[in-house]
Length: 340
Image (cartoon, rainbow, N blue to C red; front, side, top):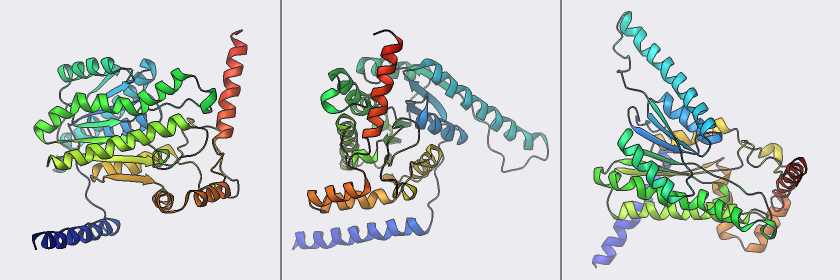
């Protein structure tokens, strides 16, 4: 009898979860504040990482930027400092004038940069220790760093396959192990995994990239369940799975030309704004565009041959081939230029 009663309660909670999810579609949830909180972003030197840094800066977070490229990371920091200066001046203006009550309180806005190769766990742990000593404990961790090799499996050097897996997947383990213990102690924090739609379904020619993103998604989901099992509801997680983003990472990737106008590459700014909305409303997962939810669902229920037919119709079966060809040509040109 107890199990029947429990089954009834579970059924009610599942239905209630659907109701709450539907309500969020109709009524936009209030965004939480990250002002004054330490936010660490990996891969902050360019692309989505840079845009995430700018968005968190506008929300008055204290930023810690990690990237393997020191120069580009400092460029991002310069943009963040410019935003901080503008906000400081804007916040000071009302107090010097008519003293509006809704002026933002003063906050010590700073940005810290660290050169870190997230594929090397010793580098991650040592840099994390520096962050704790020089900045403080991290409240928001955005695992964004990512690479792509751009080679067919049998043409891809083993070293590039290993690097793709270490940067796109293994690094998430190292950063979580570095910063999660304090989050657990405080029961407060937010872990963001920037994965990809190719972590939910795959395509030909990018086996290493798909495997790494599937791994990142699996890691994130398992960690989320572990936090729930430990009843650490103060630690939130958000999984970000965008469609192809126009950052140049997959330059040349093309689907069927008749379909492309209806499913163009995402603008990076749009992708990050959608992700920020999900993060600040504690949304567990965000797929952009929403069509990706349907694609993932259909991939799960349709026979494999049916999925192959759909891929061929959309031109998604060989969409990465032009990108790989461009990468190969660029490599050959570089080798010729260097006299190799």
